[in-house]
Image (cartoon, rainbow, N blue to C red; front, side, top):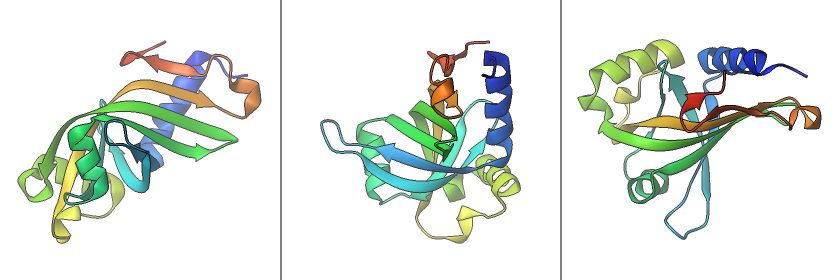
Length: 145
């Protein structure tokens, strides 16, 4: 089993290179809606982008609590987060530049897209069932180690 320090390091490394997540949103009292997103870790928050008129965007405007998952069952990262703000991609040059540098594509080249900044509140990291115990590396937006 990895230590909490090793798990945190692995999560940060995955944030730097992975960039692909499943994002689950829901209306208040509604059913989960899941989409694939590209996500850029800016050092504090995950920045994702999707169409501003999408169900995902509407869900986050009504209920800012989301869940993201990355990896696979043998090496998973599960992130509970809160959407803290959003902006049209053409109005957020700093986010667009960072996103493009990290992800290799620019959502400003598409019409109607928005950025959403997601602040992690809980992060779990585990490699298979053997690491279920001690999987929390972040709680209440603070790293455990």
